[in-house]
Image (cartoon, rainbow, N blue to C red; front, side):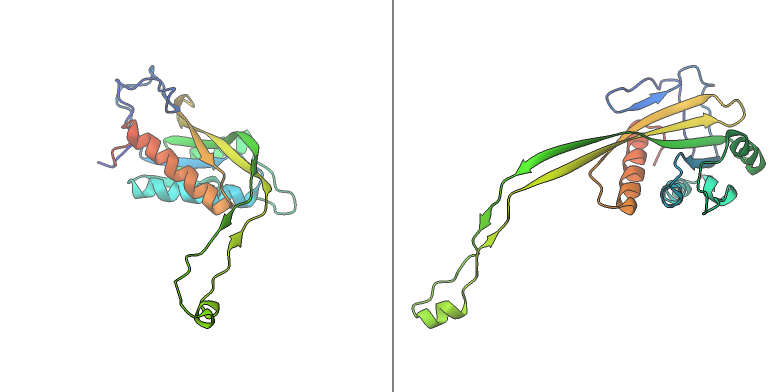
Length: 202
C-alpha cells in the first residue's frame, strides 16, 4: 500500500509545533494523489516551491500534480488562477487531496552588529626578514546594521471530494538568502514536522 498521510484517531491539536489535525475526520483516512498549489502570483516562486513539495511527496510514495503544470500562467499578466479554474483542474486530475501553501506573515528584525578584529596566528621567527615574509595581517569588519527575516508558511491539506480541511501546519523559515534556499528550507521543515507528529511514516 502506498504510504499516505495517516490521519489517525489519536491525533490532536499540536499548537507548540504548529501542527493541527481535524479531529472530526474519518478514522485512518489515507490519500494517494495530491494536488499542490502555492498561493502566489509570483510565477517563479510558485513553480520552485510546488516542484520541491511535489518531489518530497513523491519520495514518500505519493502521486502528485502541480498547479503550475495544469494551470499555466500568462507571463504578460501573471496572476493566481481563479477558484473555479482550480476546482475544475483538481477534479480532472483525479487527486483525492489538495495541498495549499501560502505565506502567513513575514517578520523582520533590525539589529546592530559591532565591528571586530581578528588576528591571524603568526609563527615565531628570530630574523625580521623571515617574520616579514610570513606576516599575516589582521582582519577587521566594519560596524553595520543587519536585517534578519523570519517567514511563517501556512500549509493546509484538504479532502478533494468534500473540500473539508484535514490538516494544517505552520512552518517557520529563518532568513533565507534566496528563493531556492527558502523553498528547500520550507519543504524540509514541513516534512520534518509531519514526521515528528507521525502523520507520515518516513
